[in-house]
Picture (spheres, rainbow, N blue to C red):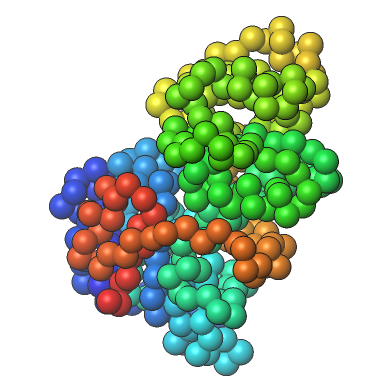
Length: 312
């Protein structure tokens, strides 16, 4: 089969299809013909050698959608999707014409959904929900700021929080209209000042920071007393500073979420919890650009949501 199997990090020439052996099928596993495999920021970082756990050679790719072509009779012929676990890092991933995964980590593609939509949504939706669960289990009346709210994870998080009764603000650097509600334009002034103005001087109960870096300290300053922030990334420098006196006087809580540390089984369970949300007509499917396996290098530099089509 053809696959994006890398033997070294960071060399663009590695992002070409190679002929590799079909993986062995063990009991309780299925073989999937991959129809769509989403490219995520973590895949790009992985290829660059920034994921210390990755072993080589390795077929990249975390998200997948396709058809079961071999395995338990219960699953044969079914359209499935999924994400999570060590796929693409310490076990082979989805940037291939087929892959083998545990049947316990499969979800059937939702009615009306395509393989393309399923693969594009998998990791962003799971990351959003896994992060939101770390903030509270009771959302009605709560307020949340999503830093990096225009991205795939931010869009999913905003939708899930609003569906549960929260009031949501999101940051962007590309506000197209002053009248757009719920958006905070980072180019127009300090983030804490804008959040305090939007909330009548109260601040927010929660912050979901999908960016990190220079947004870290300003995000903490947006929280109410006993507020909580969850962080999943660190753009730019990994080192951040903040006012520790303010932090403990306000009794704030900081939580980190690393989906790479969680199993594919956990990912599947979390996605099952939000299937009713994903099936809602208003769920925000984000625009995607498709690439054949031969154009993986282009997909890795695409400024948007890229999805590989390993079988054309």
